[in-house]
Length: 564
Image (tube, rainbow, N blue to C red; front, top):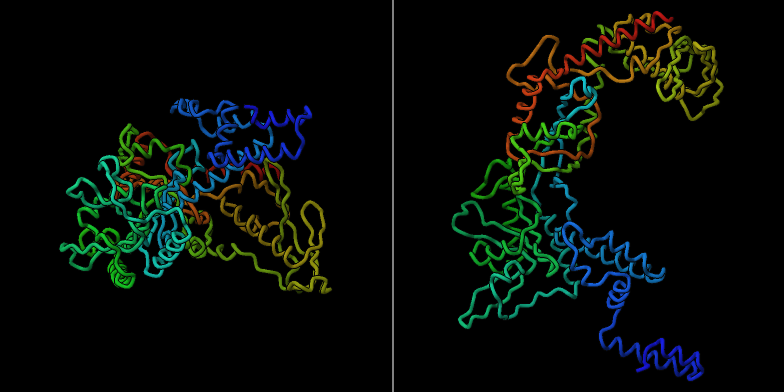
């Protein structure tokens, strides 16, 4: 009909119409398009169609060759730059909205279960195991014991309640109205309604309203059960649920639908005041281990779990087999493990409680413990002659040179330090340096650290403290000697895992990702079964590794002594 925008521009170019008449007609076409339902989403579909992203192509995608994000972004490259920018901005905004919605409804999944609770702590420092023998002697697997307080206090639930209630008030798209509709129960299950069929075959659709619900059935002898339920709306098939003893979790609307219909939950929310009375009572009753119950179906809120972390990937199959899992096609519920993320609040406390000790009881002689810390300088002639050390390093090794403090000058050059003067030191390679108090104390600690490393491989302390000695740290002290749990010549024929256990001497981390075997006591079976198999195959124990490492250090020391 000649009403396209391009036709109008052709008329303008041919002189058949002027700018004002063309602008008026284009504005009229835009208004007509908007009235007919044209919007930016429609334009995006048109632009995608032009570059091979039609609805037909989208529907042809399958599990093997899906039309996913990669193909979508590839199709964008076929558009001009302006359209690319507009469509990509819409994609990012839509993705952000989906993520926000998933988080709100409790459906956001990173693929890793996070252990949550009012508090999550390590019960003690982890057990450490070297399961790979000489194949990888420095790779260890740690077993962490974790304490969760899974409960949710009345204060926290009210914070959540008010937060979600405000969000619902801001959401104008939410549909919380009741209506009477014709439904087919098999098609409508799990859509967030419950109710009874009426005699005319119609059903009342009742949306689950955000609020507090109670279970007051007769079998509950200690108290009624209280639930907080939040319905995020039609965009999710789950509700957020909270309990005083279990914390916050998600539950399918279909499951809640059955609970309401079977009278396991009251159909109407109770007042906040009544809910808080029951909540506080349940919360206090739940102050017991998770393995115990304060009434039927109500476990305590303090749960103890065990997680394997560290270098578990190389022995993952062995761990799973030791846990009686063969990796079949069974449903995930039959798997005895979860991949979990744990973030604790007490790592710093555990690290502060760990007393720094030498690498093994055999590594020091009586009277050597006090030398593990260097005495700080005091700023007078008593500092003269004290040992210091500095390092030179490359990609493969590092050399530590010893030296002595030769002079202290009380010149107040470093007024922000104590002592305030300057120290002059001389090293075994002939170099002389001027240092402040912090620098010289640091050099003193390096010196004492090197002395103790040499003592650990059998060198007398007098020789180890000699200023003339220079050592190659890469061969003697690159790593600490491990500390086996069992003493030399000792074996444990019943608790096989002790043969591979060594003392954990590293810093306790704040966050771990690892493998949790979900059944109570299964982690002990895994340790027993795995260790027994390794012993049968002749994999070196931690005591064997320790003895070999000590011999290697002694040999390296002898070779270095011969070069001096």
